[in-house]
Length: 322
Image (cartoon, rainbow, N blue to C red):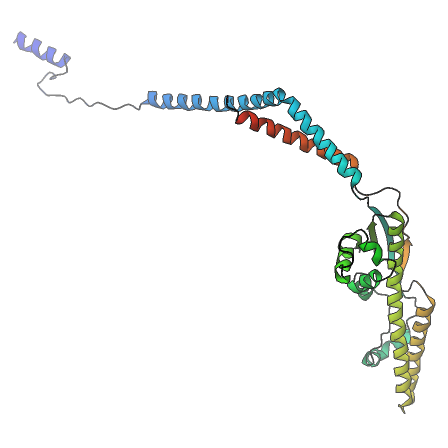
């Protein structure tokens, strides 16, 4: 009996059977392989460190490349500066002249307040009763192609626009007008201030100032001539209508319209600044707007330095010993 008890104890201690003869099954639980995960993290960190070091080394190498080939970089900088200086000195200078305009408002004398009841009758004959409001047709004329074409066709303007051109004889009026509107003339409205700025850019400062003043005068002349023609035609129409009307009331209305159109005709003939008044006249500029020589030379230095660094890097990159 004692031997059997000893055997049972030894079996239980060895993982065999427990006392009583019942077998106990052992279950092995798998633990997470933390060692493998930590190893992966260490490997990732070890792979990231050389990347930043390589970038740092590349920047240092680039600096040393530029330093080793500083003569090449200096030569390209000097060449860029000289080319920019040559372009700045040989470029055609441009001068700017501006004129600030305000739209002429019709005075209360121009508008007949007693004709408000006959507005429909006046509109039948194409008559306008006038007013103090804005006149979009004036701005349309000022910015129209017709105005520029009439200005360019002048004998003292067209030869200056095509002078120095190789195909001056072949230059058409249409091409000259488009060039003038694109490169020479600029018109900007300021609705907040109620002003219009006419800008003229040309290689001669005196000519630019003269053109700015003349194109404003031409716009007033075109609008004034149009108003004179309209008023003359309206007066003739109203007189003919009054002669063929038997109604006394209608004749009174016609004569009042004739009086208004006559006033418009007198004002159009006697006022030179019919549509636009010059608030700030153009003056001859003493400082050119282009070329800006200092900025041009600095840009040439910057471009030359960049090209020098790039060429130095290419020569080092494709060198046989690299």
